[in-house]
Length: 182
Ligand SMILES: [Zn+2]
Image (cartoon, rainbow, N blue to C red):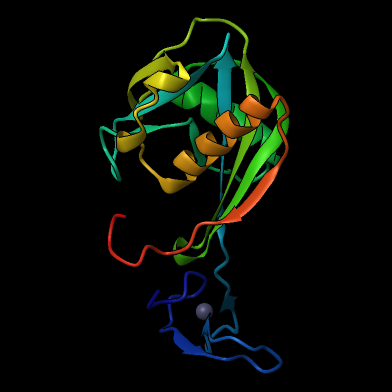
């Protein structure tokens, strides 16, 4: 950010009085432009033991598979966001269960939250951000072609818990890879 979105003056970066971190500040109008992590919210839609995945039609990771998820909007709850994203990306209606994973991704300033979910019908299909939407058995999951580590982490917890007969919530940190794209 170079210019103030409030008044158009040039931005300076420094630690405000009483604060501990450098901020984007406008000395002309006094606005401090705080930047904070973004929430990505989604679901794990299940139907008779299979899980719904979407093939991405957009960058990043075009052509790779993901659970339906996206950025939370202003004015909605986490659960509402997860239901909306599932509808937008997969045209799928779900009933949410418990929150299942909450994954901090500090190197991209995001928090990803996934809910257990029950598909309400099989009338789903790709939304504008998906090329394809399909149900997968565990042995069909395209582990090598999953779009993000938050997706593979969520699915690994899901199948481990399913084996043990009980789902519990998992809060993890996804740290920056030591080498790119590992
Ligand atoms: Zn300003």
